[in-house]
Image (tube, rainbow, N blue to C red):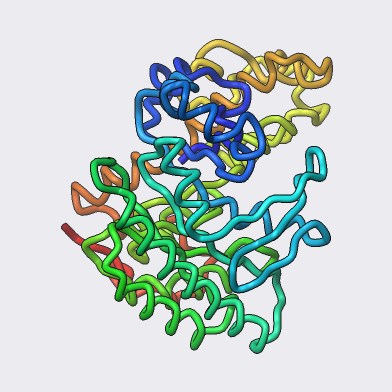
Length: 355
């Protein structure tokens, strides 16, 4: 899922996302939209789909990750999170029920329960307290969702937490599974831990969640990691990498990364990625892209973002096609060389749904 934090995927129009990339779903963020322009205003204007002119699916994060990244500007209690806006310092309270109400006002298709996301590393005691709080918040938020969602068409996902402790992840997944939710997310990864631990925690958690519901790992990952997560049984992923890295000149290609500012590209008349048929690769040379980047031209962000997202989305399309024709194990073997073999069972990961 491309990330459109502020109701926009940076540097691209909804038309680009639909016509050039065929994006099916984008992610927006409750925290940022709550602060500006506000859920009530968006609701008055017909909801987030109409507001951002996006007719396809939208998932909104509860804002928990953003709130907890504020550190000195927030206070966590069992009731919720009291925080000060990073924009104007105004004080606000996010409770499990309140974040549900905000997302229902936005009109999202998939909404998330408020959770507590810890930094890495954390102690077992702190993680246990946080995990128990996340479970209570999920139970409260889900009950509120069931009361509110009559007549609305959206799905709510609780989020499994537990830091990097297997016993806490197991306990949290078990408690959330009892909610019988439409789907489940795995949060608290990509917070500074080694990538091997991220995969280990996902591998531990996925088999504990219902195999007939979407399973979503939040905030991952590099292109070569996507098949590894799919092998575990993950259906959904999001990450700012393709868009953020594009704007800094870090481009993903079938031949590896390209740092476009490097002098080796100053006279390079070849396309960015000969294997890619996106508009950027069909039309422009590396030399021109380097010129745009060095000149600080806005067009560079547009072209680079278009390509990076195409690379990620094409990777996912290749994975889906490989599964359909029975060649996913071969694709997986080409991607897993950097990961420990203990995470996988041949020919499919333990959580993979062959259907």
